[in-house]
Amino acid sequence: LYPRHASANNNLGTLMTNDSQLQELYYRRAMNITPQHAKAHFNLANLISKQGKTSEAETLFRRAIVIQPDYIDARVNLASLLSDLERNQEALAIYQESLDLDRENPDVLNNYGAFLAKL
Image (cartoon, rainbow, N blue to C red; front, side, top):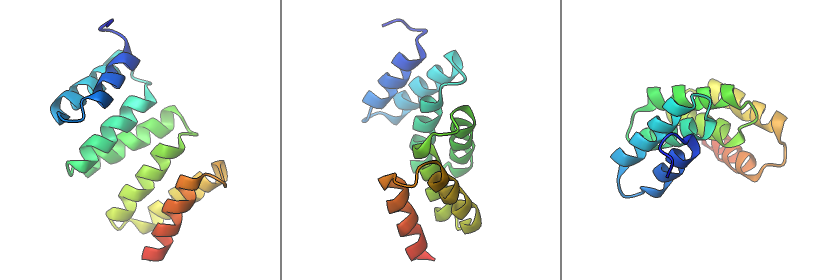
């Protein structure tokens, strides 16, 4: 394995499902190698969100979206996080932006429907 390959490090992080510390290490390494690696930002955001680090997770989801504006999964997960934090107006805006990008995306439709049902 070439140690300075961002995608390889990101992929290693996804394989380390039983070791969140190693996952975080590999995702951060991928981001250090290639700061514009949207998937590494997304993966780390998902990981640390589960650890309750919601502020950092939000920042990472937003960075992933800046890097790749059409990153629907990052948008959906950000909206879900904001909803969990009861920041419903922000979540609604993100869901609407996601629908503007892809009106037929099943993940967007499913999560948006669940969000609306909670309101």
